[in-house]
Structures are given as C-alpha cells and as structure tokens.
Image (tube, rainbow, N blue to C red; front, side):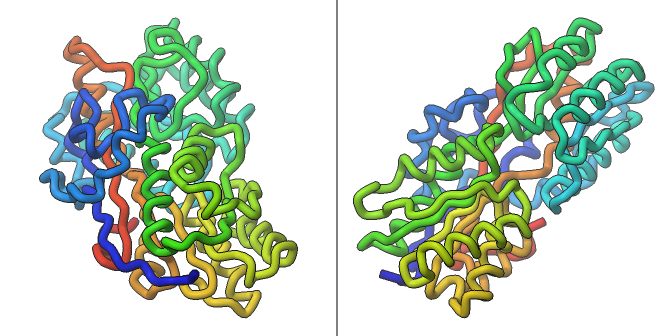
Length: 360
C-alpha cells in the first residue's frame, strides 16, 4: 500500500499580504468567509486544479514599508498577546507583526503567555491597563479570554484576533478575526494521502489538543475527507503542539500498533511531523517509505523533508500577519467598515511543487 506521491496538488501560496475584506480568492480556494467555524470548507476541496490566482507567494517577507500604510500608526501603540514562542511559526508571526507596526510608525508591545491560558488572560488585562490603542491576540484556547477581551472592547480598544478563533461574539469580544480555513487545510492533506495510497491504509493522527479550533478543525477536515472504510484511524494522541511530545506519543503508538501496521501519520503541525519522523527513525523505519507523513504550516524544515522524500505533503498556514494587521488597523483609523472574519488563502505543497525558499 505504500506508494510515493505522484500527482501535483498545487494550491496558491499565502494571499494574506494583500488584504481582502472578503474571503481571499474565489470559492474554489477558500472554504468560506466564516473563519471561526470552517464548516463550509468542503467547497474548497477541488481547488488543487487551480493553482494560479496571481498572489505573491513571497509577500510575507516584504518590508512593512510595502504595506502602503506610511506613518498611519504614528503615536499609536499596538499590543500583541502571543500564545508562546515555542515554534518557528510563532516567532515568525510575532516578528512579522512587530516589523509592520514599527515600519508604519507605531510602537509595539508583545506579551508571551508561555502556553498558559491564565497568563494570556492576565497579559491582555495588562495591555489594556497600559493603554494600548489596538490589541492583537493569538488566542491560546477557545475559552478563557472572553472577560479580558470584553474589557478591552469596553475600553474602546479594537481587538483583532489572529490565527485562532474563540467562543465569543464579534462586537462584544473582538472587532475582527483573521485566520486560515483550518478545515480546508485538513482536507487537502487527506486528498494528498488518498492520492498516494489509493488502495487505503492505516492512519495515525497527532493533534494539538481539543481546546483549540486550529487543532480540532484541521483534524475534522482530514478525517471527514477520508473514506473511513479504506483509511481507518488506528491511533490518535495529543502532541501538545510540541516536537518532543509528538515524538513521544508516536513512539507509544508504534509500540502499541507495530510499525508494519501503520501506513501514514497526519500531524496538525509540521513541527509535530518532525517529532513523528524522529520516532519512525528510532523504530528502524523510513519516513516517506514505510510510513507516510503529512502536516500543516509550511515550515522550511517540512519543505526540506518533502524535497528529500521524508514528508509527503504540507499545507501552508501563513504566520505572516503583519501587513494584514496594519491594513486592518488603517481601516479602523479611517472609519471604514471592518468585516467580522477575514480568511487567508493557503497552499498544499508536495514534492512536485515544493519550494524550500518559501518556508519559514
């Protein structure tokens, strides 16, 4: 059943840098305008055939001066409540927002919650007390921040959620939410797996936990797109977003199931794919041959693994929010209407279309 990937499933690379106040791209590329639920993502399932929508794949690395914002944030302070700094995705996100805010003339304050929801709630209250003009939040979990976010909104501090949803109401807990269609991302990985293993196979899932829409939506998209009879899920564990933890749980699953009884492992992040591959190596098996590996985020390490054949596919989830955040703030300052949800475009990369230089 183990076969190499043999068909291009190219999608368009991140369109987040060119702000669109409807869902980015057409309906064949994004699952729906509601980034909180991702429930309509199925409409994007066939987008692999339309890879060219004219977006600039390298736009995330451009200088903030290219955002066209000039000195729009002169005299303004943007506070950022980040979940943690334990991955290249997170540090890239923080650095990009900082660059664009400062290049637009603003001051930037970042608070790092270190992966603790109570700390992030406290961080948000601290930023409100500090009198920031705008609050950007990457929510650690769906619940636990509503009170602090409502406090910010009641103090007339616009709240921009990035990369994750919360269980809350627009206008009460946040101004707008900018994120990818996580269900759609999972679907693309499922399609890549079915192309590589058309006869079916036993699948393992390593998620990031059940308290984050990112993890649950990606897993939902992946599982729902598979034929359950042909692709049974033989193991599922929480990798807690961490490479080391993913390695540990994959070692446990291999020991329980036997490496020969596992055909593929899907991790909801590429960092956890790296951990899973370490476990596969430790079991004297070969990633990409004995066990196929798939993930989401589009890291440079993942693209290098795809290029070498160790990873089957990676669907991007852009960490480059700097431009779109500054553009959104500019709209708020100018009194323009802001949509409740803005959906970023992402791209599936396989060995046929991977470009290591695009990874972060």
